[in-house]
Image 1 (cartoon, rainbow, N blue to C red):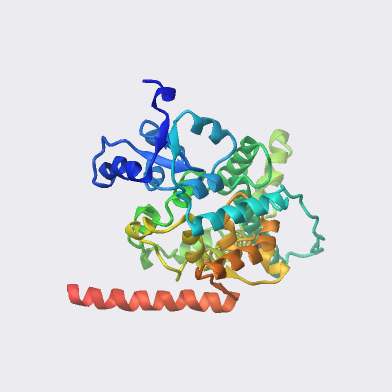
Image 2: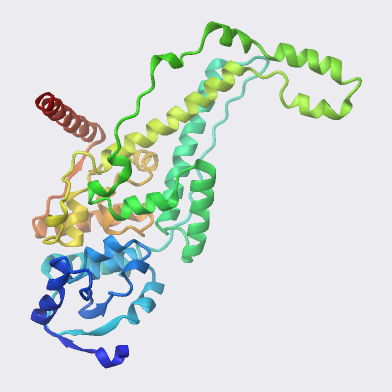
Length: 391
C-alpha cells in the first residue's frame, strides 16, 4: 500500500487507540508522531533516526512539533514528507507548546538567529629575555589552558551548527577542532546531549569512581636520571656535528630544553583547561531537577528545557569565559542559535515562563556554585547513610 493510499484525517481518539499498543510495550505496534497537526508513521524509520531510536520513541503518540523544529535542519523536512499519512482533525497543540513555537518564530522573524561573525580581541604578549622564567612558563601555560577552553566552546558552537548555513562545514570543523585537536568524541557528545534528560542512559555517569594508589610515586633515582638532560645532549651535539652533519638540525630541536619546565607547562595548561571547563559544566544542570522518563510523558519540550537548566548572570567578559553557556536555558530552547544572540531572547523566554508559571532559575556565578556544592553535600550524606545500612 502506497503512502498516498493511507492518507486520511485522524481524530485524537483514533490516534490514542493506535498508539496505545506502543505504550503497552508491543514492539510490533505502529508508531505515529504529530508535527504541525500532521500525522507521520515512523514505524520503519525508528532504527534509522540519526538521533537514536530512544529519542524518537519518546515522542510516539505525542505532538513533537517543538522538538522537531528545534533540533532538525531544513533537509529533515524533505525526509519527513516520506512518512506522511494524514492530518489531525482537532487541535492538539497545547498552550505551553504554542508558547515555545511563538518564541522560535519570533526569534526567527527578528533575525536574531542569523549567523554571527568573529570579533577581534586585543592581543597581549609576554616578552622575556636572557633567562628562563618559571613564572613565565606558568603564565604561558595558563594562557594555553584558556586557549584550549575557548577552542572547546568554539567546537561546541560548530557542533550545534551555529556558525555556517551549510551543516557539513560545521561537522567538518567540529571533528577537526574537537576530535582531532582536543580528543573528545563528537558521536559520544551527541549521544549524551540527546538523552541527557534521562540520567540513567549516560554511561559516563553510571560508572564507579576509579582511584590511583600511592605506589605510583616516582623514586628519587628516577628523578635524578632526568636531571638536566641537556648536559648529555650538549655533549652529543659537540661530538656528532663534526662527523655527522645530517643530524645537526635534529639535535638542535632537543638541545637546551628544560624537562622540569616542560612538565610544568604541560600540567598547568591541562589543569587550567580542565578546571575552567569544569567550572562551567558544573553550573549547567547540576543541582537542578532531574526529569524521570515517566514524568516526561506529561511535559512539553519547552518546559523540560527550562526547568532542567540554570542561567548564570555575568558581565560580557563572563559571557566570553563561559562560551555563552551561562545562557543554558536559552541554549537548550534554541540549540542552533549563535551564542551572541542568546541574551537577546532571554527576556522573551523569561516572560513566557512567567506567563505560563514555569520555574525559570537565574542566579550568579558564586551562588550557583554554592547550589551545586550543597547538592553534592546532600548526595554524599545520603550515600553514606545508605552504605551504612547496606553493610
